[in-house]
Length: 116
Length: 117
Image (tube, rainbow over all chains, first blue to last red; front, side, top):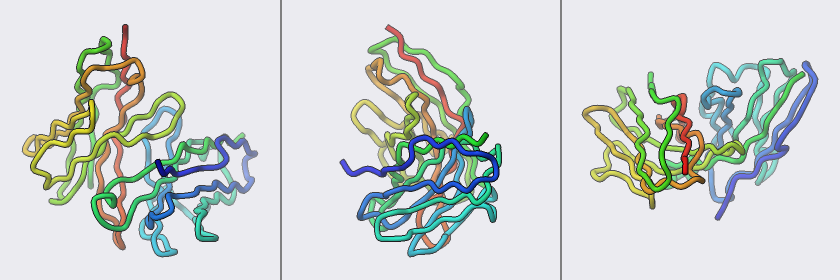
């Protein structure tokens, strides 16, 4: 079964460092998303991406965050200068563009970010 | 704004019994979708079931069924014949359309289900 893959599974970084989280969405999906889950809390929407641009972003997704699709397969989330409160599980997701599959987001296994 | 409420922080069920996880929602959008995701202790988010607001029948996927009561704005998940592997956190979520296409999910706070022998 097709899946969304994320790397790294766990990253530890120092406060102020830049972090890039990588995702390979399902190949025929055209919408891509990042969500995050602070430990013990609910999953929160960060950003959606379509046709090489951001289609919507939340208040959490400030200037410290950016997303990019550098090639035909990868979708990345960059945090420029990490803060302690960026420690969370970051989920990448993707969905189809049309049909019933367009309603369902398939999530990756997550990248756990720990900022020290 | 959309809102999802899960009032059961934790639930216990005996193996092979059925269990219902509650979810209520609020939205002003006439077109919406409701999801249930499972999150085991390993952390990944696993899609279980989807119900569209215009779907006439309640969604079912194997042992999972969604008891959709539109007038009451509830979308409860029913798991039949519980198994030990069902022990996990369960999230209810609602889809709203994103300008430019795609979907944005608003999640509830989750229900931790423990299946006991």
